[in-house]
Structure formats: structure tokens, C-alpha cells
Length: 472
Image 1: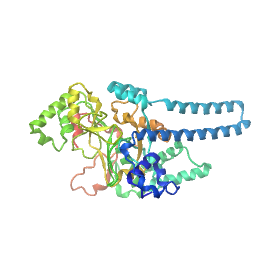
Image 2: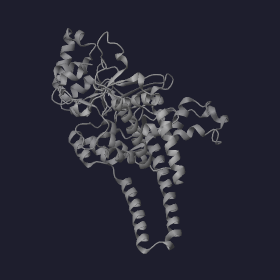
Image 3: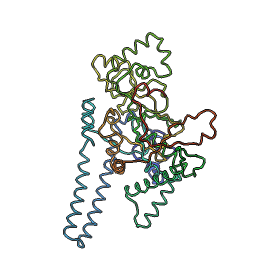
Image 4: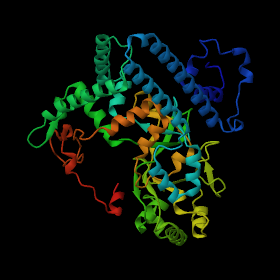
């Protein structure tokens, strides 16, 4: 397998997912043909739709087998059931098949979201309603998404490298043995994981003194890991990120958070930040051409401009502009066949001023998530993120007051366990209330580096002043 050209191996992973790793041991690999196996990715056409078709065919076949097994089981047990019981089971099975068949034809999971999209971008809305899709993949890919998983899922997946994850696995293994079940339903393991988190975080909270502070040096190793995982999950809660850059040789990646809106109208300071970046503002203020560029940019986008916090890294750089306009001069497709583009700001400004484009056809991202040394792949391995392939309309649509949050929309489009996980997350109401409120300590304070202050999240206030968002 390792002797194959890199792009061939990449294609196998994209189409077959993790199963591609086992191709050689299964007899699929033929080293004699390695010289002929190079695949030009640009010549594949819309391989994403091809893979999607394979994925859906596999799901349909699996569900067909499950229905046949259910039918056989029903026939065997029918003689021992009453008429009402047989009618109930038959109705339930029929309803399940109807729901799945209905889902095959449904092209959106929220009509309210669809109406908002149509009011913003009719062409993209038509594309969404006639062909939206999303499904899980094994590795992050440019033009696809990585979706932050809940802490319950992170612990469930990461039993090999996490103390708390391993503890959860032991609890679940014991429950499986006691019940005689081969596997637990997602609602069961999710509930056990949630209970474990609440239990451990409760112990940590009980260690707080009268001022709500905890001496981190007194935490057990498991408790310290739990607190770290919890705070990290809160910082990236339900992020949906677009992968815009990935280098398999160096292991570097960049993603943009799609669902962290910052502002929808420009002030002059915000316009400067988007156009020039924080590092270049003072220099550009003295440049006549830059002032002209700012005036034109503000004229085009002042009253309607979708600006997002793309992530914690590189926030001092000019904003990244993402859109779906193929023929926009200066724009570059982020991945062949994705039909998602970045750049071309000058042409975008001119197009908006000329009435050719709407301001909401463009999204501006301040900052990003920048990963080095395969850190994104490690985050996926540890269960923090789930890679997802999707129609470009999912990545390009604005996140402006969506009735159904984008995270839930993507999870439901994927279906399966992710859809069930979305439903379980919606059932959450009052979460544990932990927040690091101040990491800037007074100079000269003794042992303050190990002190964590815990407060009620409900007491925190968010300043809505646009300019204050940029004190980074």
C-alpha cells in the first residue's frame, strides 16, 4: 500500500475511508501495476458526487439487510405474539422504512433556514433545495468540513488516549456484560458519558474555596484532564469549520469557523480590520491608495457585510473572503471541483458597486484555526472533530440568525449516529457552569498560576459594541 503514489492513496481514502488502509492485506493491492496507478485528481470531474453515490448505495444496502433480518425475526416470533403486538411491530417497521425513504427525497432539514437563505441568495438557495447533502468521511479534506463533537462523544471515541475515556469504556463494557448486549445504543452510552462528566466536574466544583477558586495543583490526574477537556470543548463548542488548506507533506492545515458571526454591518474600524488587518492599519492609514480602497470597500459593504471570527490564529491578518463565484477575477478555487473560492476582493467590490453581486454572496473571516505537524489529524483521532464532506451550499450559506443552528443542520444532513447525537444535544438544558474568567494575573502574585476561578456562566455579560470585538 505504501508503495503507491500519494495521490492514488489519497483517492482511496476519499472514496473508501479507513477501509483503504486494509486493502493490501485483503488482496486488493497489486504491486505489479503500481506504475500505472497514478491518478490525476483534476481529471476525475465531480468525484465528490461519485463518492456520495457510493456512500448512499452502501447505506441503502445495509438498511436493506437490516430490514430483511427484522422481517425474518418478526416472522419467527409472530406466532407467539397477540394480534395487537403484531400490528404494532408491523406499523413501527413500516413507519421506519417510510421515514428513511422520505429522508432520501428531502433536500433540507429546516425549511425556516431555507427561507432565510432564499432571501439572501436565491441562486444558492435553489442549489441547496435541489441537491444539498453531507456525509461522514475518515479524514479532513479541503472543501469539506470538520465538525466539533460534544465532550460526551469525545470521551466515547478517545478511550485509547484519555484517562476519562478509558474510564468510560470500562463502565460501558461492564454494562454490556451485565445486559448481554453486543453494543449499546447511542442514547445509552451518551447518557453514561454525560453522567461521568457531571460527576467529575461536580467533584472539581466542590474543591472551590469561598472565592470560587481552585488550586489546580491539588487536582488528581483524571480531574485535571477532565477540566482541560471541558474548557477546550467550551472554547470550540459546536464549531463547524471549512477546511481551506491542507498539506499532506508538512501536516499543516487551516480551517475557518463558519458559525461564529461577528458583525453584519461595517464601522470604519471594522472595515479597516477586514481590509488591511490589525498589523497593517497604521501604515495603510498614511497611504492615499489605501484610503481610496477603504472608501470603495465601505461604499460596497458598509450596510451589509457578513464578518465572522474564523478562529483564534492569524487574527492580525486581512480577512479571508470566501464565495462561490467561479468567474470572479482574482479568485482561486480552494480545491479542484469544490466550486468554493477565496480572494478576488477588488472584483467583488466593483461587482457589488455595479449591482452585479449582492454583498451577502461573500463571507469575510477574521482569523482561522492554523494546525501544524498533523495536529488536525490528531484532533480527529482523539474524537474532537468529525470530518464531513458536503455540498458547497452548506459551506457558502450565511449563518445569520438561523432558526436551526448550522451545527445541528450539518449533523442531521449526515444522518445516522450524528443525527441522533444532534437530537440528544438538543435535549440538554442546564449545563454545568464552569468558566475561566481571568487568565491575566497580577504581577508578583504568589502561586496564582495554579488558581482557577469558577463562576456561574449566567452571570457573564457579552459586550455588543462592534469595536470591542477587536481588542484581541
